[in-house]
Length: 256
Image (cartoon, rainbow, N blue to C red; front, top):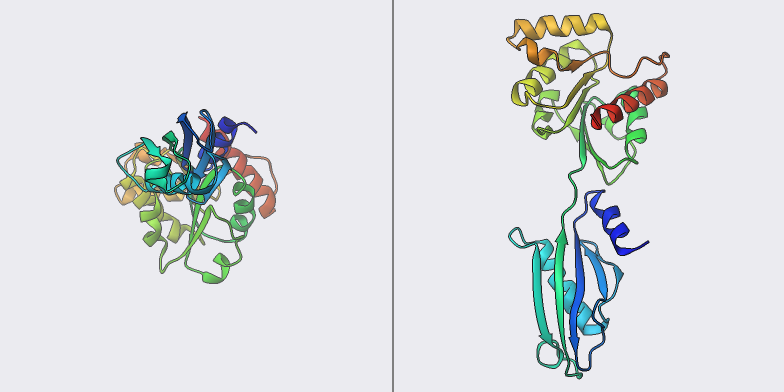
């Protein structure tokens, strides 16, 4: 895998990368011009700029740049004897470039029941970040542990609205109509441009949701955003089949 493929692998999964390049090398130095290494918050990922003290200093510099909100590039010139404390007396110029992570596809799922238990493992291998909210701790703990999954045990589903962002995909797969309505009302009210709002249920359930939301003052253009029934019409009531149909629909809408 070349460095650019590695960089893409990190940035597409939400990880910032510092590319450290030896821009110039003069005199007796451990690294040659053109040498590169890749650094993330987890430390050195690949490559080298010479090892030893020079590399340790470069790693510290990269970590500092990762924490900076103002800089994306940095150029340093070090005299190895004076600045690094090495016996060789050459000079190295290093270029530090921050490659920002691509925003991850964000899904907020209200409910952690049978369908969500089947859906989350299908979604986790994708380049996404998932938040699952439920009032039942025993259902949340059944979900597979993963770096890109966060579970939230809250007193009410409405408390989870703050997890939603303007570009989030929202799925309401709660215990029923009474808990779906406040979620939809708040999500649509706060984020009228949200790309996807889906609710599990039938066409008759959608009609009931629209009726109640309209009565509470939600406008018709916002109500048109509700996708219900959720999932592609492939048939079958098994939670795993439903999960696959939902995942397929989400992927189709993500690229729209």
